[in-house]
Length: 171
Image 1 (cartoon, helix red, strand yellow):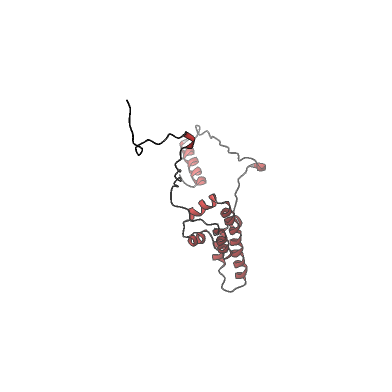
Image 2: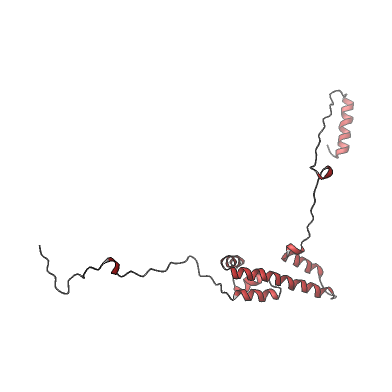
């Protein structure tokens, strides 16, 4: 059986597999909206820290939430480094404010102390450590003793109970 095709209806000649045109690959779509992060944010963070600013100031400046700052720090080592340096600059600003305020009549030391304790816990939070040890610094030893009351009379038992209540403080 023969099939006739006109010149306009002829099938194109077969091409070897390697010569076939490849379809351009579609770019992969990322999930979520694109990041607003820009490398110049590192400098802005340092500027704000020089004025005593902190994480809330950075988030407000970039119109983002704090969680995004953590995400940017994890994704961009330069931003993480800027945040670390900013913490030092921020602390210097607050320390200078405290030094300046010490000589002034209207310095509110309590507000300053509370602020630095909250912002710089490592350096400004008082820590009290209580440790309980036994004899010669060893473990605490607990002794329990049993008193045999089987040979006591009823009056002696009542007197003993009253004595225990008096020592202990309540029945």
